[in-house]
Amino acid sequence: MHELGIVFYIIRDVKEVAERNNVGLVSKVVMDIGEVSTVVPEYLQDCWKWAVGKEPLLEGCELEICTVPAVSWCEDCKREYPTVRYGRTCPVCNGGSTYLLRGNEVEIREIEVKE
Image 1 (cartoon, one colour):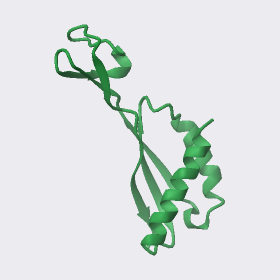
Image 2 (image 1 turned 45 degrees about the horizontal axis):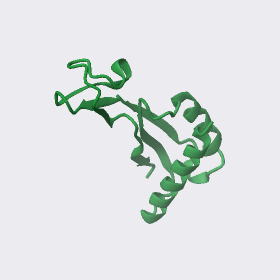
Image 3 (image 1 turned 180 degrees about the vertical axis):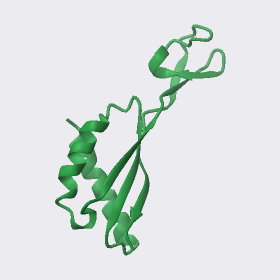
Image 4 (image 1 turned 30 degrees about the vertical axis):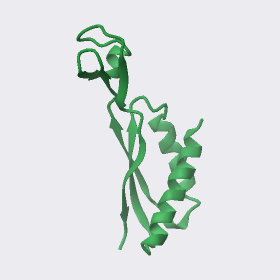
C-alpha cells in the first residue's frame, strides 16, 4: 500500500505551503488523482484520516479527490481517445503509436485554510 507514503508527501507539502503563508489551520486539501495513477482513492482516504489526526495543522482536514480521466494520443491519426476503454490501440485507426496524455497525475490542486 503506497498510499500511506503518498499521504506523508501530501502532508509535507501542505505543511511547507502553510508555513510560507503563515497558515494556522488547513480545512481541506483537493487532489487530482489520475485514473491510471495506481493510487486507490479509498486507500488514500483511509490513510489520510489516520495521518491528519497526528498533525495539529490538519486537525479535521478533509481530503477531496478529483479523478482525472486517462486520455491517450494517437500519433497515426492525431486524435485523443479514452485510455482505460481502449488501451494502447487507437479505436479510430487501430494504430499502435499511442501515448498517455493525462490520467497519471497525483497532484495537489488546492489547499483551503480556516481564518
